[in-house]
Length: 246
Image 1: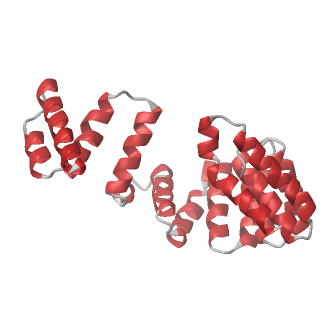
Image 2 (image 1 turned 90 degrees about the vertical axis):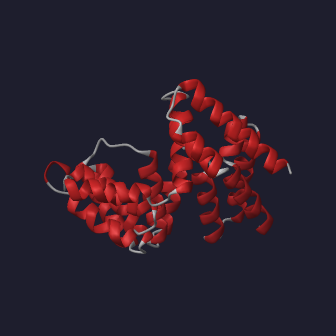
Image 3 (image 1 turned 60 degrees about the vertical axis):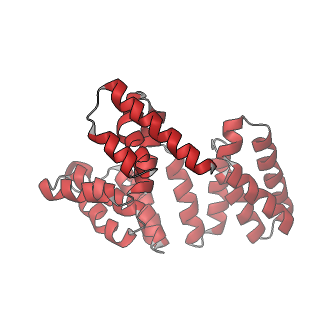
């Protein structure tokens, strides 16, 4: 019964919004004929854009659209690329494929984007290295990241540092990975680096050091803001689980 009441309330609200804002009346038909989904579509396409062009509103809109139609960005990217085979459109298509976890299909588009002015682009190199790592080719990913550092000596990126650390670990360069994670924990804004560092300490036989890092993660999250606690809850849980296993 509460769901029915909420659905009716949503229909009344959306219908009132249609009338009060002078929108086409066919929206009312959609809202009435397709309860729930009609209101959701109207919310995403009509109300959220009116809520402002803020980043929050845009993020919420994109999240809802992705939930309703997860293939939409891929279709749009394919269409744009079919019209104009530009590097920008190729990268958009690669990103869409990446989001769908079609890494083997994204890879050739990233490779073909590394030409001309984009030959040493650090962001493209990072994306390609991420794909290679996910395709279990850590050695190739590490070579790409070494190339990135060589061609872009002034480039700095926390995400890049994290990727480099994970790639070193995956490639079996354990000591170098520990050093890289340790350096990353000095400035990382989230807790992922600390948890991964602690996990590797455990795997390499340093449980006491790992315990200190896990404890630090939990304390940092617990004394953080409400937003930080929510954003890092997954890593806090991993740290707590790591402590339980020690």
